[in-house]
Length: 261
Image (cartoon, rainbow, N blue to C red; front, side, top):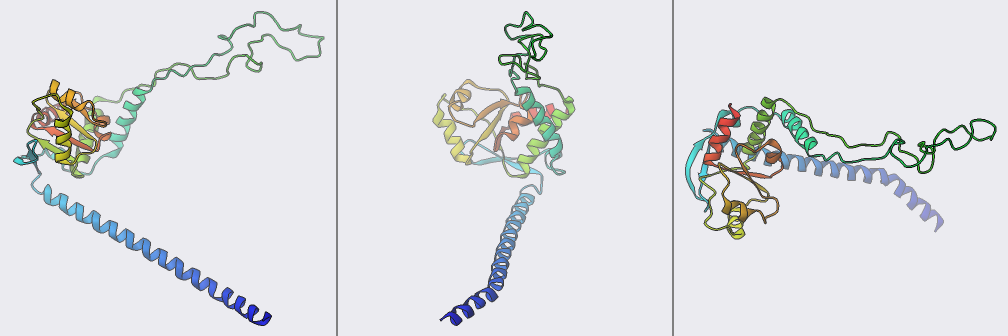
């Protein structure tokens, strides 16, 4: 019995590396298959995009999702790859401006006490101290702690405009930009705006309008993730923070005028 057990254990040791090798080869093959599948889908979506923008045009829809006309996009939104560096710098600037900078601590000049020397300089056998407000004392001030400050800074206006252009371009190239004739609803009802989201299968849209209307603003404010901005006030942070961008025909003209000024 012992001999058989020894032989069996030797066989297991002999075949273990081969099994591990086969397992590793299988995992590599699976990984390669996944990569190929992803490349295939990416190629397919790229092909679809080139077919969609072969004339540099997008369909303009009504609120029922029917195509009513076609609009040729400006080359600034379709040519050249997206400049992510400009987008990054602009987003960083806007996010820095949103920081409150209210963190505050008290240094030795702000804490209570410390008017007199705790004990005489010499003769006590203790360390030399001049104030109870010293940072090394319990109840003393904080060393190099944060204090209220302004984190905001500015980048050139040309760079800010370019960032908006690149953000819109990214939406166009990924098929996340929708052009509509108008965004006017008859009543300030949430269900009417929710119907638009359902028609275009929108998850977290940015609605860009030429001029805000009371009905649309009131109807959209109860839906999480939905924003309404005019072409004059929209910035790159608004664009990249939303999954889709829905622009009215009038807002597109106003945006183009602003970005080319």
